[in-house]
Each structure stands twice: as structure tokens, then as C-alpha cells.
Length: 280
Picture 1 (cartoon, helix red, strand yellow):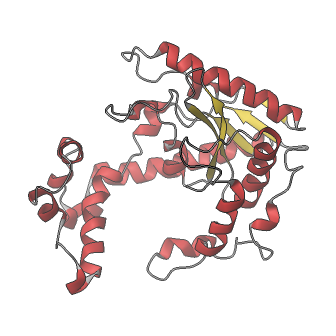
Picture 2 (picture 1 turned 30 degrees about the vertical axis):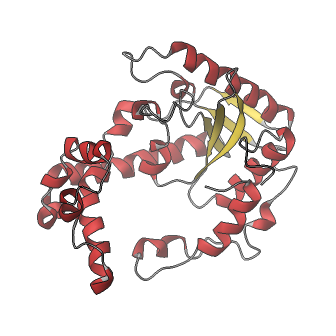
């Protein structure tokens, strides 16, 4: 999370690259632009672009949530964003069908991998580790009750880490992730799209004492497909709550996404520093 698209591009120049401790990074090692990501900060980046709108992701996903007015406020901001993007020279393809939310949620592997990965991280710290395992963290009493409850409800402590590679549910979810990526890429190629557009959340942020409804978060499309995405401020609701617009691109298309996001950001200038923080 950064302040601006330019900051995100600068951070990506530092972060992107091959890490021998993370073998999957080898896939993108040759996809990093020689001129760097900050060279993609182009005011005219939306000229000639083709942007596909995923209308299904604008709707409330949980029918039991009584948040219709909140959803309408988000959709109103997104409609204005689509118009602004079109005004900057992009062609809007409205609407595009990709992955339904039920199929998408079936590719979630976080609950199955969390225990394994956290314990591996703690082990990598050696004697410097403040605790030795996830179980020790849960038993410490120093974890927020709501976080502990979510971990328990998801069944994370019961995951058999040693046999995870033979867990049929886990393996099926990994296969589904590949299917999702293939479907999205096929759709983008067939319709000649530079990016897909949708709200990162179908409702505005909730107050700090409430829980943001996970069912209304659309970030799973990028997370489960492994495809890059970027969120840019799209404006505010009538109550002054921020709304973002998410753009998802093809594999290793970060340079193009930065072009698109930067051009939109510069055209609308929606970012507003929080009260009491000044012009950061």
C-alpha cells in the first residue's frame, strides 16, 4: 500500500526480482522492464486502452446483508470512474463475464497454508524467534480475540501440515487456481483487453468497531489467479468514505497497469489526505 501510483512504481523497482528463498519468483525474473517501473508513469496511458467491466462484481455477494444503500453509493462512484476513464481515451467493454464468486471462493488456500507457512517463518528465525509456533501464539493470550476466533473458525489449528501435499481438498483448490487464471487470460486475449475493472469492495469501509464483510471483497480475483492488480482512489461516497477502483491485468503486465492507473490518477486527482495528517 502506497500513497500514490508513482510511489507504488518506485517500491516495485526495489521489491521485484528473483529470491532464492521464494522459488516461484523465478517465473517473473525475466519480465521486469529494463527501464524500470517508474518509466511507465505516462499521463496518456489510457489512450487507446481497452478496459473490460466485470458487472457481476458490482453487486452484493451476500444476499442476507442489508447494505443495499451502501452498495449503491459504491456503484455510483464506480460509474463516474468508468466515465472518467473513457474520457481519457479508453474503450470500455461493458460487461465482461469471467469467474463467478462461488467458483472463485473455492480456490482459497490461505486457511490450509497459513499454519505451515507461519511455522516455517518462525523456524527460519532460529534463536531470534519470539515464539516457536502458531500454537504458541494462540496460547499466549496476546492475540486479539477476534483474530483468534477467526483462526479457530477456519479450522487452521487442525490442518495436518505434514500431509498437506496429499490433501485432496488442497490439491483441488490449487488446480482451480490454475483454471481461474486460464479463464481470465483467455477472456482478456479474446476480447483484446488491457485490464479488467471492478470495485475492490462492494461496500464502503465500516467503522473501526465493526467487521468489514469479507464476502464483499473482490480482491480474491487477483489473489487466486496470481494475476497483477492495482487499486486507485475513485472518489468518495456522500458520507465522505473512500471508494477505490481495481484494475487487473495479464500475467506480468505490471508496466501496463501502472500506465493505466497513473493516467487515471492524474486525470481525476481523487486522493485526499486524511484529516489531521496534512498533505503527505
